[in-house]
Image 1 (cartoon, one colour):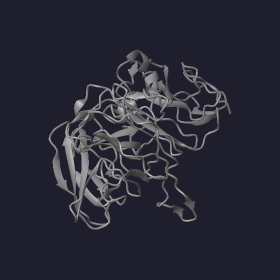
Image 2 (image 1 turned 60 degrees about the vertical axis):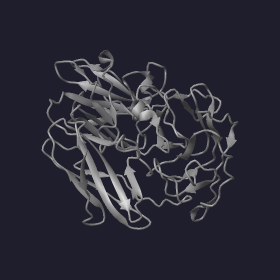
Image 3 (image 1 turned 90 degrees about the vertical axis):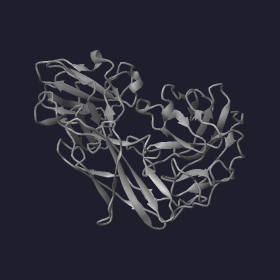
Image 4 (image 1 turned 180 degrees about the vertical axis):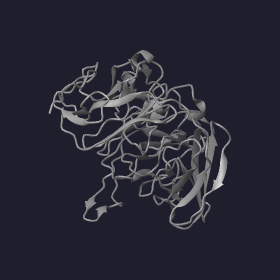
Length: 441
C-alpha cells in the first residue's frame, strides 16, 4: 500500500457559539482526498458520552477506515497530535488481532494517555481547543496530516461516506461503524450500561441496564457475556420500563466476566457497545475468594503545587498506603481507582514487587500522575482538587479501603490522625511515606 505524502492539511472546524448553543452548519471546507487505502474517517476531541473504550471509559478517539482490498496491520505505525513530532506514539507489535484493520473495516485509536491499556491507547489526549492529527507508516510516509479547530463536546467530524471526500459534523458520532447518513446517525445509540451491583460478590447475579435510542424504532437489544474467556452467551434484553435490561447469572469468586451489547433498529442498522466488539469488551471481576490485607489509605494530597516531589522532581498528587499488618504486602495485581463505581480503573503492575511492596508497619506512596511509564508506583488516575474518591481493591475486587473527599486546598493533605485510625484531619505539613504523628491543623 502506498500512502499519500501530503503536506499538513488545514482541517479547521469553526463551531459558532450562539445563544442556543452550537451551530452545526458552521465548518470550513473539507480537506482534499487522500491517495492511500488507510484514511482517518472520523474523530472526536471532546468525548463525554459518545463511544466507550473496552474499559468503559469515554476517551477521545480517532477512527481509521481501510478502503483497500487487503488487511493492514498497524504495528509500527506512529500517531501524533503534533505534526512537528511524528514519533510521539508508536503502535506496538505483538497483537495482530487487535492492530489489524480488515478491508472495509474500522479501527479505533483511543487518545487517552493510558498506554498500559493496550496497543491502541495513545500516549496523548486530543485537545478540544484544536490541534493536529498525524498518522504515519513505519517508513515515515504520511497516511494523514491535518490541523483541526475548536471542538464541541460529543460532536465528531467525519467523512459523510466512509473513505469519501466530503466531511460533516456528527451530532451523533459513529465510532467503529459506518458514517453513512451525511452527518446524521441512523444507527441506534447505546448509553453507558449500568451494573447492579457494581462490584458483585460470589453468588450474586448482575442486572445490566442501558438506555437505547434511535431516530426510528429500536427493534431488539441483546447482551452477550462470557466467563473466564469462554464462549459468549447471548441474552435478549427486555424493555420493562424506560431502559433495556438483562441478567448475567451469578458466578463464582474471582470469575472474570466480559460482556458487550448489540442493538438493532427497524431499518436493520446495528450498533455494538463497545465499538469493535466482540474483539473489545466491557468486563468485571467477581469479588471474594481471597483474604483482604490490613492496608489503609492513610494520607493523600490532591492539589500538590509546591510541596513534595516525586523521584523525577515533579509536584504530583499522591496517595499514601499504610500496612498495619505483621507481614509485607505486594500491591501488584491490586486495583486502585478514583471512581468507586469503576473499581477496576487501574491495575497496579506485577512487574516490580520491590517497588510495589508495603513493608509490615510501613508506608508506600502511589504517585497519582497519569505517568505509568515512570514506574510501577506511578498510577493512571489523577486526583481532582474539586473532590472525588479513592479506592483500593484486591485482585478479586474485594474492597480494602475507600475514601471520598471534597474540595481540597493546595499543598494541604488529608490523613488519619493516627496511622490506620478512624479519625481524619488536614495537614498543612504533609507527611508522605512517614507516620502522620501530630496533625498540621
